[in-house]
Image 1 (cartoon, rainbow, N blue to C red):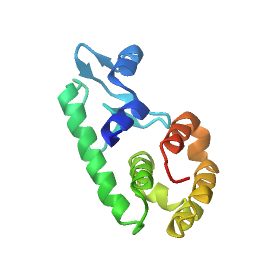
Image 2 (cartoon, helix red, strand yellow):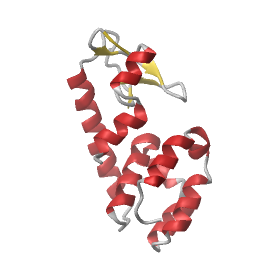
Image 3 (tube, rainbow, N blue to C red):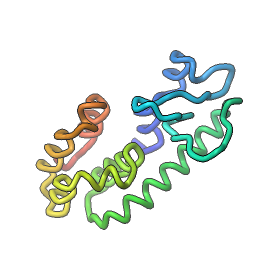
Amino acid sequence: MDLQYRLKEYEGTKQYQAKMKYFRDGKFYPYKDSLGFSTIGYGHLMLGDIDYSEGITEAQADALLENDIQKAQYEYKSLGLNVPSDWEDFLIIMVFQLGLGGVKKFKKMLEALRVQNYKEAVVQAKDSLWYRQTPYRIMDMIAQLKNK
């Protein structure tokens, strides 16, 4: 399953957003995420002074998501980890959701990954505010892991 599909599921599919009224009349409109940050499309944090009040098309939402994924992939590489592809995807999704600074706070999980202790890495991922805030998402992410 590719990252774009998984992130659409985690961040809210078009159908879900239509139900929540964030997607209407063929456009995505701004909403507040679970922490109260202004967001649009598939979890794109609205930074800077771009005006999204008129909404964005599905193609624009897809482009924002693809750019956000590329940024997360680039930032993930700065962690310097050599992990299997399932964990690479897990970490890229983490960077997408929490930012690189947020992921770096998972010191025990990252250390477990450095020594290929995947079982301990899962334990450490679950021992977090992130897990308590979004348990179903994290459990799905863990279910997708082959190395655990």
